[in-house]
Length: 173
Image (cartoon, rainbow, N blue to C red; front, side, top):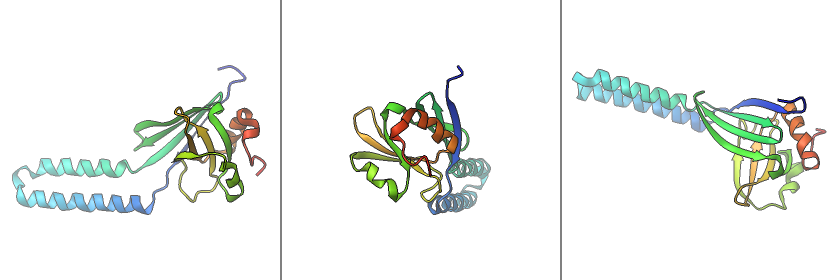
């Protein structure tokens, strides 16, 4: 990388919702019920089945852990979803030229969105109520617009501001 290159990378851990907690409880209780049923019905092969069911429940609970990684390199933003600290999936890959407007996700900046017909909403923040959420509207490959929510640090916002210039609002906040 050269001196003028910009690279910022950061992680945001997705907070567990009530839905995640209920799903985890259901997986554990369901797994226990199936283990007991298998042990009562087929006791001679129950050890192997119990281990398989237990491992499946473990993986199901583990994959509830989600984090997002933002990588901003010289005007390109990549967002990856990482599940269970193992599986990585690219969720967004855009160039700064595709971003039409970026601002804090507050009612004050809602008028900035009125000129765009959004076909997709993508939330890559830690939770719906988290502080420090920002949005941007970007043009996708098919010409449609996406409303994207992220939770950037001040360092990431400053790096993006160098490329977005007048398209970024609320930097003084």
